[in-house]
Image (tube, rainbow, N blue to C red; front, side, top):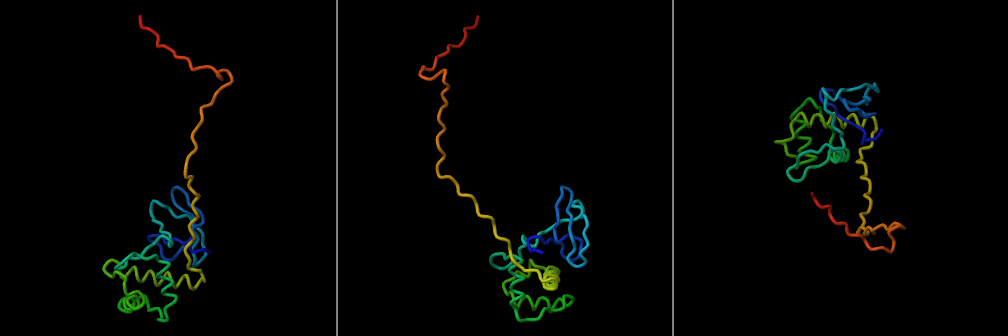
Length: 164
């Protein structure tokens, strides 16, 4: 399972693997119980983990960077039900988080999602962007096509028809 295929769905706990998207929703597989089902896009919103950014006091950082920092930290994950311990944990590992815009519920979600990723041994890695095709420096001029009938003849000047 790839990190780039993981989505969070509003109103539904846990993380899901995106199997296929449709115009009115998506087919997803739960990471926890491996059940596959259709989720309506009219009721729920989908957020790819790869595209989620977290507010900091300087530039925003990607959620994958937060997870990598959590992984490298020697501090034990706090109980997500203790809001004070959760906030202290993030103040220690990411002191530049903007705690006015990142709510405690967001911090709890990050801990829950990180725990799911570790339990299922999913590598937290952003996908590489595809290299762009080189842009042509100069567009060649289009030559006028000459048909065999008009070759060597001067273009004729047609005079507009006179009105009666």
